[in-house]
Image 1: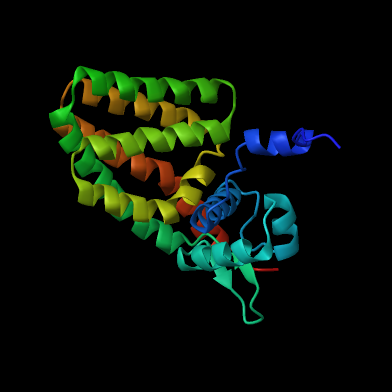
Image 2: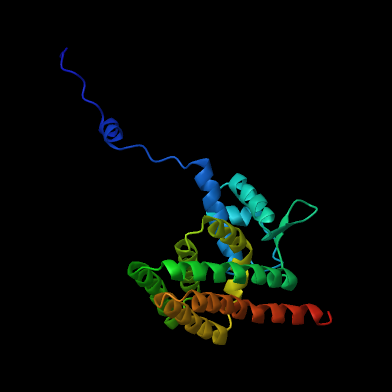
Length: 243
């Protein structure tokens, strides 16, 4: 009998050379599920009043029922979903009074951020905001609303960051959970979408001129103009007789 050592199998060699697959952390899985479900609500894939089907969501998001159920609980707390007595959930309807109240607060916050940011703008910051505006214009020219919405949010978030006020950023993030769906819906009207791009140019010009007053006014008007039409449409629908 030979004393030569037994050679390992090919599978054993590959196992030794191949690093183990990363394990998904529970926190990351929850955050990703929440983000995907929130995106489906914001973009209208799940329409207002739609009842959630956990099994279908599990298949669509490629996750088990536990992260789906936890995500639903989170979005109920955020106000995007409404819990029913039988423990199921539906997508919350857009409420005109709530959106109007959000507009008042968001307009004031973004106006203040614009004033603070304009006073602190550097050439690099102006160029950065300009690139985000260019991305929005590119998506608008292609009719790509999801891409436009993403660039639009990055545009507004960067102005908040450039204000240098961390409290503004904290409050803005909280409001975004409620106002994103309304902002997305407002751009479904082609005429409003086009005007929004022109208003973003005015904001960019005011920031580039380092003009706090003009920047604040441009952002305040932009927020109000963007959502006033949606509020009016919702109030008209709410006032209409139900047949």
